Length: 619
Image (cartoon, one colour):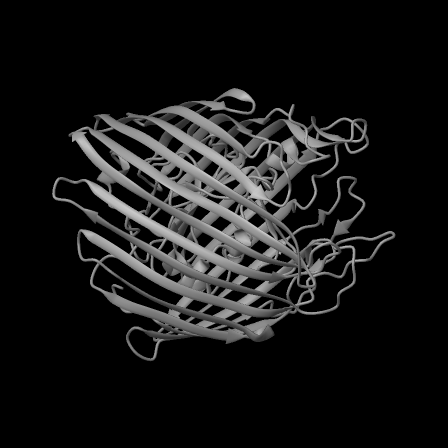
């Protein structure tokens, strides 16, 4: 298959409705066209062209799965392990390919999000109903994006609109007095797009923690046997236009406000805000040269309470600017050169001695196809106000063994900058910390047929200079190491009218630090995991099921607290009585399996949720 590389603005980014994605969740039918992905190379490529292991989850996939949260959609996907502290809205950590929870870069519409104090993104607060698609890119990407992209990158795209103006809405209710209300309007015609959306998710929840109080405490270190509720209220706006000369302008805004109850000794309630505002201008000074200017700001804000009494506040503001030049050298070669500026500011009740940090990065990339060979090479230099310069690079090679079968090999380096808590928290921080560093190697095979797609990837990542508490100095130090080995397999296709997607992961997350924990399994990572999705249309009905199984994991570095493996089964059905209308029913954890992904924080039992959805065709 001839592959033509083009700048992102030269490819229509509307994901084909009904496509499988790049080994994505099941959709309504398989079509020949693969979706376009932009996260793996910062330029538009089809899923068949990219040399990275990528999963794409589309809007149709999300609605078909009847999931209520981002973590539910991502759960069980190849390379992903998730630890959740007790249900909807509770703290959720995501480990990509066994790396730390702050080793995954998270973007919303191209804008970096997350807390500069904690160092990770609040997946539990991202509003699923306002999401158009999610791209999960596995493997190091610091040579394109800078800090945090050791395990990979997850980019969330908000709903875009386009086409004829059309309203949509949904209302749902279920177990634990959980309710969902969504309404929106989208449209714009052929060359413009707009979307305005509102959503509210509310649940009384269940007892999120079965901890033990001091002395000898564990978990949340208290006993509060009550239901722990959550509310998430969201507004989103996006609009843009493509001019006659091909130039594009796009603006987006998202604000999610959460109210969360949990069990804790020092705080047991929080009010949070996740906000992203940004814009992008694309234009072509010359026929083979495209320029993209991106600017935006993300906020991560948290006010914390104990039984209604204010205790603390932690706020992050991140200002970003990016200039990217894509230059086509020919039909099969593309060079990208760019510059990123990022400024982080923290504020709140803690008196950090340093409250801002600037980072600037220069990056370059080459994409090319020479006969049966696909090539990708990238290099980046970051200049950080706190620790100085850092250089990362990556190279990938793909070879088409035969029609529909490709071999891939890659190598990449990455890093993670220390957080404000690790550097400057009063009485705890160490301003002399260095970035965490990694080296990764990967090989893979990918096959594409008329009805089936499959991939098999094996990798090893060595992470050095990991930050950990040093009992000798009572400060965080760069003293830990880890070696991560894994094999991931993904199969998607259809058989006898059933749409089938299967994910499987074997992971060896080994602690390589000196001391008594050398050789132990890193905590909260399942060593084996699998997910199976099956769906089928029967007239006006669609029926489906999701099975997620994970092996044992440990909750501590010493591997003394073992969490048993588990398997859950979710069943779902949809009935379409009229055009544009659907009634959905989902029964989660049908077998009522008791399990934990973090010790003393139980997961939900059997749940039922019913949704009435209005979604105009083409809207």
